[in-house]
Image (cartoon, rainbow, N blue to C red; front, side):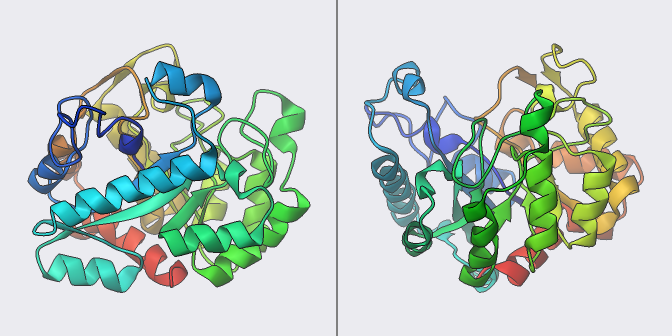
Length: 326
């Protein structure tokens, strides 16, 4: 089963400075091009996750400003794709993905996780679009120019988009950039739902009823997202799958449980994949991209039809891409 994954943090981990760990082949991440091919990837969204200053030292990276870091990550992915053009190409819209697939190639797409670097500037949104960014996760875990993050603090959680955030929703719709509400406050979610004229996504979020982390979606949010034509990508992190967030194991059984629950609340067309590979910790039963067929096999055993599997795997995401990207 070919599939599209809406979120990974692999660019944060590879390639390494020595060049021994690359995007084509590595032993330190869950994703590389060779294993993507083995797992039957159709398209992979690669996030440029904006590290906090203290994270640079932890990741053994020299600190650089956000825009330099973004450009470096973008160039790294584009260069790696060019070096492996026989199996993968960049994609910037629906037509690119379909064309690459028809040629037997996978597609790589670029996103930014944490819109802080936008700094309230429409000019910067244009700049990122021109770089090839086609999705922005509006917030990470801190307040920024768009709005507020998910939080245990009710005041923060209920806070909506800021003035720029509201204006940016319309602008991103026109520009052809997907709006991602994973990490956004509940108040911000409902502002996006009210204001966006195009489908939006929760690229890597699960059910809050089954796993109470505030990063997950409530039943009502799942229904609203579905009504807007959006999708949520199943996240493989133990923290967002288990009823007890201290449990550090991610099982296929839990993935199936969340997918069935989300389908029950939001219907077949909301289902998508957003693994969060290389951005999560713990022990994962599916810990590498080449093991993705295990999920589809489990769903098949659970009674899922081929048509439903295809919607989850790539058709729903392709629809949203076609409806949003230019």
